[in-house]
Length: 258
Image 1 (cartoon, rainbow, N blue to C red):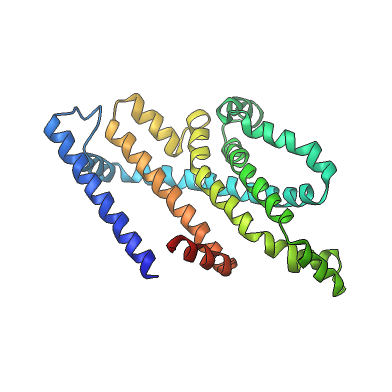
Image 2 (cartoon, rainbow, N blue to C red):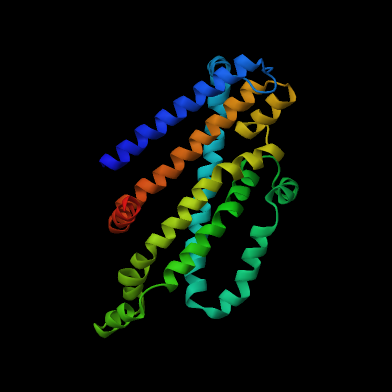
């Protein structure tokens, strides 16, 4: 706990120092605000436009969480199928990789044609970007269970379902949470990319609008708010990891301190 508190204080102090250097450098060098506004101007404009930014933040957060949850709902069961069946792994894995490789911004126009400008295409774009790390890490987790542990479970008379519930799934949780945290970090990016292309609201839409109006302070403000949302979402997943698999989280933290 003390190590985490020290790290948090150090991080806050470093951020404050960086903002002070930024503020002084911009003002002393006479940089135009439309190129690089100082933090004080960004904060002032954000406060003045907060109702609009808050409304956009809410919509982006809803899209982000909905797409992420859809990725979890599809990704983990799919990973179970791939881990248990080499046939499905050989058949479906190349398709999954292909979907990940294709730039999501190239798929967005198709989603607009198919589903219109509502919330669904945004959720689907977030889903496409987040479910890949969930699937990959969950498959690794399901396959990495010690064969000796599996054999011990079978020797006690545990059937396939009981073995999965008591051994395989709990053993895979650390890897699953790795995938969830990677997906959480990508979710905000996916949401804003979707709003760049297929939206008339949200933070992505505001960034495009403010950029077109050369309101650079508000572009920075929207980006910062988006980053804060993504950071909070990531640490909520990490907090959930500490609750669900505390033994793994504690071991990882102790290893990091050594």
